[in-house]
Image 1 (cartoon, rainbow, N blue to C red):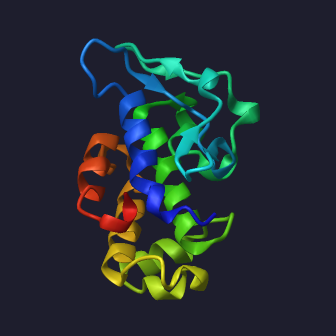
Image 2: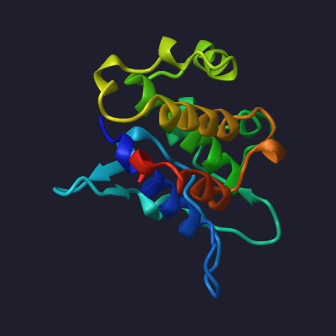
Length: 172
């Protein structure tokens, strides 16, 4: 996972999916993971398995995807509600950003604690040292932290994530 420069592009894709364009229904991907991000020959990211997303209505979306969902990416509220929402995609995106920053498949709670305290150097993949500036790593870590907030109400929308990352030159 050496695709730090494409984090903002992934966020843009999810923002589009969630319906931040006029006259387009909102969609929830429901199965975001590192394995679902494909990179082309120019290192442009694409989300795969788009057939798993569901149309959002005013009602809450219930999913039959429980058995095939990647547990590390599931938002905490899913285990009690069984519902996928735009905010559960945001949570999975945050986990993906932590994975990119750390170079590890499993995101552990200590990464969140380090990000909260600003000690990102404790979990940043050392192979990424020359790929971006320290303040950009900090911005990515803070964004991942917001996206993985325990409460879905406290998580940003993907549109807000895109806006936040638009000022991060190596995130684009």
